[in-house]
Length: 208
Figure 1 (tube, rainbow, N blue to C red):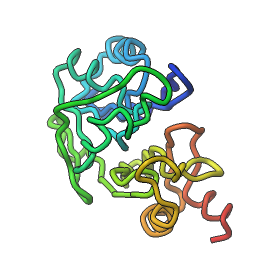
Figure 2: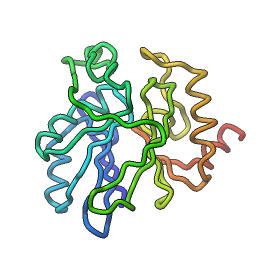
Figure 3: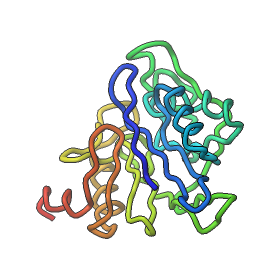
Figure 4: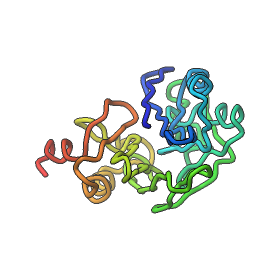
């Protein structure tokens, strides 16, 4: 089961639950605001969240990862090298909108890693590195459910902002063309700030 949750502190941001229907265990992706709302959903549904996953290190995706980690006693995982953003409020843009945000003690994964549940190793997400919005940006892909959690790499009808520190337009376009548009066209893309779309719809939008 995939449950999108729109959160708001300074602006709307999407967080996602990816839950194994067989056992109620799962992942929480990008808890960037309203941690009590997320924790309430977990309690009400009786879910066991095993890991918090981050698509990249900007503050609106990481701000409350530590609150969730401490409440549930679970790890937070990010792409190797994400500390450049997690530990620096200037790089993660938190000082641009409010108080500084830092996140220490993340565990790291690499491109191509399979992130699995302890309760069911067959329930997994594949890490696909998609730099361009930030160097540490990734998407999490599930072939089984034909979906990808795309962070801020691509949105419905638009692409990620490449003008923030560490961003690069050419790198972003390369990531989208070679790492997202090569996924099956029916793959649903769940982004950080818009409603869902599909790989096929976005390819057609750009004439590909």
